[in-house]
Amino acid sequence: MLRKFAAARSALLVASCFAIASCATVPTGPLAPGELRLLKLQPPETIRAGVPYDVLVSFQADGAPSISRACFFWSGSIYREGPYCFGVRDVEPGSPGTFKVRLRTNNRGTYTLNGYVEYFRDGKTDKSNEVSAWIAVQ
Image (cartoon, rainbow, N blue to C red):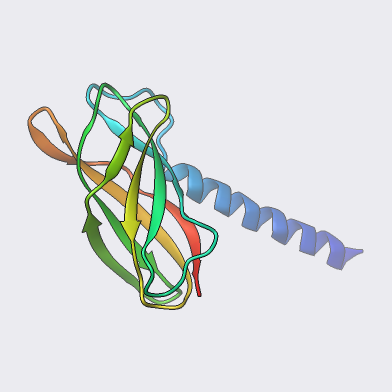
């Protein structure tokens, strides 16, 4: 009985840590004037090493954002590789808005893909928050 309680408590603690970590990257308050906030990365379920793939990114923005590029890190258990920055395409403003980024990696394995965008705000380049998703590269 004690083992079941300890296991349940451990599972709850791990779930709480993931919930806190995922919420920490997406601010929840109102947008500042001209702000762009990333909400979610949606990579494809199947990713093959060396083959380009599209990631769909959801965002919220005050006004029509002018995104200059999207930057990504691939994180394994020991290292964080990047940032590597790419142009965006198929920008669809809305609530939420979306855009696509074409990525490629030659490294097989399971990674955390972290991304942010650089965009123009008040005549200057600004950086959004980071969002992340798990990817498995075959």
